[in-house]
Image (cartoon, rainbow, N blue to C red; front, top):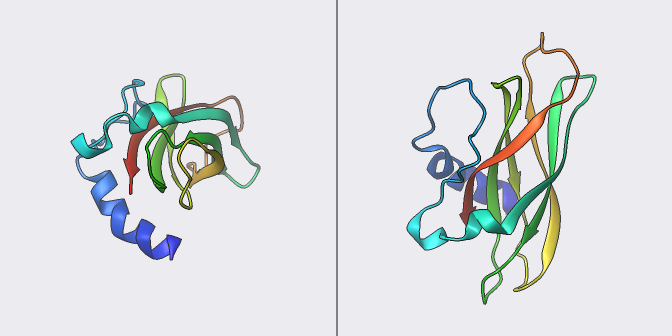
Length: 126
């Protein structure tokens, strides 16, 4: 179910994404009905493994009055350049509760391991 929902919502989340190689500037894009959703998400870890996969560990706290799922887009960057775009999806989270979720993506093959900075750039609540 989560995969089908993510596949449906992914084009909506990515709509309007630019082609810049710069990582997100910290401003989170949300639709009017999702106002405040960006404040519900924080990055607790950002790493790249030896195979080139990048993972951002996220804490997602549902600040609404009803159970909601979240679709989160994260940019991973180094030295002002984006090296990967990551996507994370939660199961429904009860009001006031926090869930940990990993947003994952793949870095370029020639991207060297090292410190990355992960920034939440888009959040959709559903």
